Length: 198
Image (tube, rainbow, N blue to C red):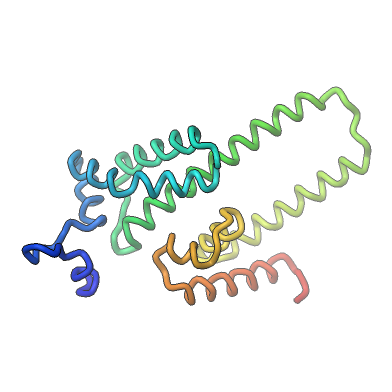
């Protein structure tokens, strides 16, 4: 651990280093239930907040937050402290799980709408518009795949998650200037990949 981080986590009494989030997560990976309890206490509120911000519904948010924390327990062995902080790993998982729920809910609403409309004849223009919209979605998905993982993560948090640049920086535990650079470079690459004139 870097010296300044070690100082940050040093307990005020006794001078002994407090247990870091990363240490707890590594203990959870070894099946330590007590460490999981401590990790749960530290992150359950944060996870719930990230999820509720996207889902709005408190009961669904509680359900998804619980799913995330169970997933942390199940997949803790995948955590690599060299690739990022425990907080970033857990909150990214929460964000992705919330996005999955939003997409699932949207798909369910879309299915219901399709069932309600399947007996109606749609106008030609409506069909053409839907085809064009699907084509644009495919273009955007293809363009997103041209970004680096770091750029894509920042762009998705900002544009699909609705986070401000400052919030993205906090979620990813990255300096704001770095996030702005990633976003700028990512948006330039997206524009170029989609063939949009500047």
